[in-house]
Amino acid sequence: MTPEILARIATARAVRDLSDLARQEVAATAEPLDPAERIRNARRMREMATQIVDLVVLAEALAGTPWEEIAEALGPKNVGRDPDTVRAEYEDAVAEWQAIPEAQMEAAAEGAEALDAWYDRHREDHDPASSSPVTDLLNRR
Image (cartoon, rainbow, N blue to C red):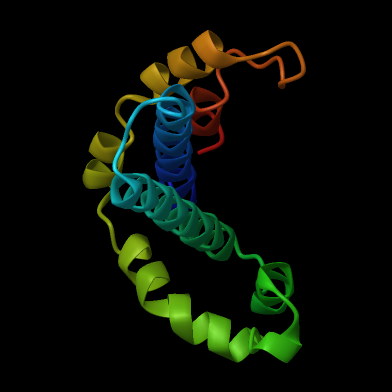
C-alpha cells in the first residue's frame, strides 16, 4: 500500500458520498423544504466537491506529478495558481500522508470492496465497465 493509493481510495469514498448526497437532493426537489435548508444542502455539496479536488491533488502530488502540471490543472496562473503557491498549499498534507505507517494505511483502505459494490449498483451503460475499480488500486502496490 502506498500513500498515493490510499489517497485515491479516500477520493473514491468522497465521490461516492457526494453522489449519494446529490441523488438525495434530486429526490428532495419537490419536497417542501425551508429555503435556508436547501441552500445549506447545496453548500455542503460544494464543500464536498472542494474536498474531492484537494484529495485528487494530494493523490497526484503523492504520485510524483510535477507541481507545474498540478497548478495548471487547478487554474490559470493569472488567478494566482502558480506552482510555488500550490506546493505551499499542499506540502504539509503530502508530508503527513507520506508519514502514515503501512499498517495504518492498510486499515484505512479496508472497505474497498464495498466501494466496488456501490459502483456496480450505480453503474450505467456509458460508465467504464470495470467491476472492481477501487480494489484494482490495491494490485498496483
